[in-house]
Length: 116
Image (tube, rainbow, N blue to C red; front, side):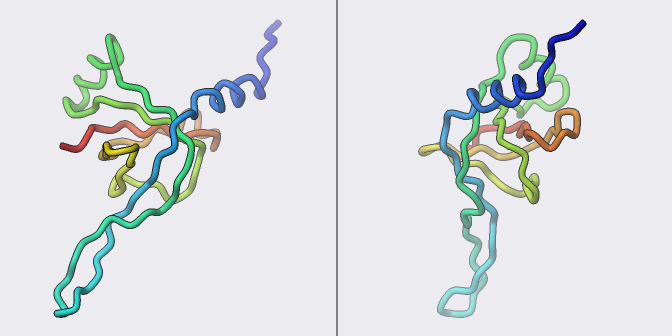
C-alpha cells in the first residue's frame, strides 16, 4: 500500500523554489523618431529553482539539443512561452523547451540555455 501524499510533492516543490527570478518578454515600442525599438519587459517576478544539468541528465538533454544547460522550475503559470527569457541576478536564460510534468498544473520545467 502506497503512502504517497499529493501534499508531499507540493512541499518538495516549494522547498526547491529558492531563487527570485523575473520572466521577461520582448516588446516593440517606438522611439522619439518613430523608429521601432525592441525592449525586454518584465512579465512576472516569482520564485524558482535553478538546476544546472549534470551527468546523465546533461547528456540526455545534449542528445536532444546541445544548447540545454539548465532546468528552471516554477509554479504552474499560464502564458509562459519560448519567446521569453528568465533573468536571475545578472544572468539571463533563454527558454528552449517547456515541460508540464504530468500536466498537473503544479509546476513548469523550463529547459534553458544561458545567454551570452
